[in-house]
Image 1 (tube, rainbow, N blue to C red):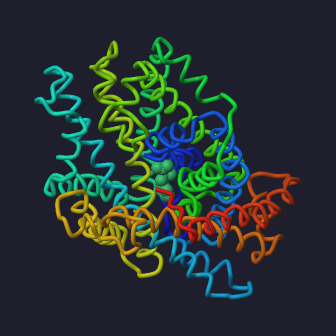
Image 2 (image 1 turned 30 degrees about the vertical axis):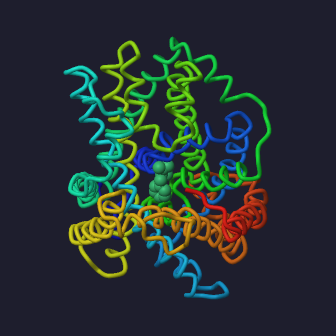
Length: 467
Ligand code: PHE
């Protein structure tokens, strides 16, 4: 059965888990998490991150799923409907609008980065067949040249957006569910293969030690952990409200959210093991020279390191395929937020909505694509002074530092304080049963999450920037 009685789509039980895990697992897990973990000295940072995921991310995810399933609408309508009897009424729709806008903007540059993984997948295939060779350039130089090549940037961005539109246009059940059900097991298999392979790497022992040693964490590290908890779980932007609106009544929201969170965390840790085993396998001097703490490691040093490994010719392309799949199952969920808005609120058909929103996101991504060196004016456009550099960076700054935390804050406050406890509790127990822990859930939403997020916002106002 592809559609529910309402004519909107419905996920199968397992289908929802695959789709939501697919949304959660993305560039955030495989690229960003290893990078920020490395920059924050591993160990205790990982512990803090796990706490942030469990105490702040998970309750907000549950809150979003509650709003979505309760109202069976995309974020704007969902907030308007859920707030019908609450103080503020329709004004809460603005939170849904903020999330929808956030998804739109995030997708415009997320798909761009995702396009790079396709390009590097192609590069690796050719290196695997013809031998690793960069024509006398360093990988860093060739990455810089790739970024500065406007047509190539726009081309790969278009490619990724086209794939995303293709899936979303097919619908909740026949598109999103089917594709994520196919891609996620492949992704899991590739990742397990890479982890098992790293057991034999000379850097494996040090990677594990680095990941789990106890050491100091800075206040910045704490903030970064909380901010990343939102990003990695896809909360704060209405993606889980939208997916939640397609969840069956007999499915348990708490158990599903726990499974999604657990799998997302597991994948982030596995990605760290894979990357750190490679990084710690080279000697410290070389590591300092080539890796430093650069965010672009995935495209500047990692390919070369792969080709120094046994089986590198197989592992390198597989790795970029993995990152590409992870990104696609996330871009699908972002486009679905925007498309579902056009379907629910503007009466467009699914095909029209996917094409129109995908096209608009593509166009909006063009200045980002050209701001990595291709067009000087765009590469230096910085409305926030020295906090950002260029259009791409400015969009990332706005989403990561403002829209995501604010979306999470208002969602937590809404469900914690404004939505009737009877209602949210009944939604949580539907398909689940006993909810004795409800007061803990409510406490986290009412106090812990808002406090942590307000602290982030305070730091951002003070000049801190999370990328
Ligand atoms: N969770 C995704 C990642 O870790 C990013 C994302 C954020 C996707 C918000 C959808 C909504 O890469």
